[in-house]
Image (tube, rainbow, N blue to C red):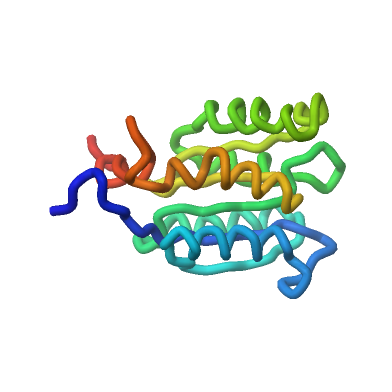
Length: 173
């Protein structure tokens, strides 16, 4: 049995939502994959989809149903433009929302982008014991989310508590 101070590697999926990027030009997805693997986590799958709420919902539903997947990081589609539909696509899939993530992300972002942070509809939650984080599409926003929030919550060594250590208890009745 591992102690709470041991690192627990998680299997994470990374999805980029973009109408203009390809896997070859996806710097945000590249950053998240490199950060996750650099921290010791595994990449269960990586994908890039256009901003289509039904395609997004189908893929993320597949990942949520996979018992191997511990978490999903989605980058893109969280703004206010006509094509931004990540919240509309994925919020209905969540069993529980994590309002503190979006609130904290916007609060931390104020330091970097000022009041423009209010345009972010970043969110997180839980679906079938799988963590889902939806981040803005810019690489700098992904860096902010990873370095200041997500990295720490996916690390079992973060005190006083973190998401990695509660994962075994997420399906308790």
